[in-house]
Length: 116
Image 1: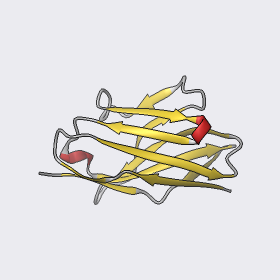
Image 2 (image 1 turned 90 degrees about the horizontal axis):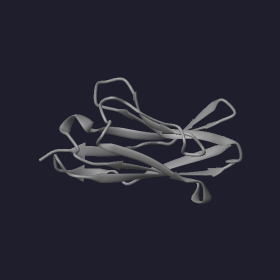
Image 3 (image 1 turned 45 degrees about the vertical axis):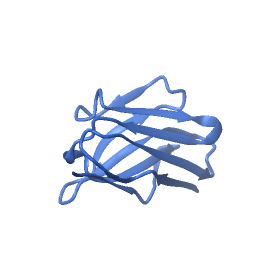
């Protein structure tokens, strides 16, 4: 069983930055792709960014391209999401996920609020 835990959410002003962290633990052997989704109030969960085990394949949602950067440290089983130039519409609960042998494992989420 893979456990995934996020941290780093909080309140930030528009234009500000925040860094989210996600740590995978437990049966992590075989965890390949990791990434982030988010769910804004009253909206469906949406993809934000994903990164392959090697880091050679990275995908971003159009809404965050050029502002968010995903990276990973396999030695620490950690994935980071650096979020810059934040907008009020980025307000959401951010969920980290890891994929192991075709199964997605999700964290409980961390709230990011962008407001003045």
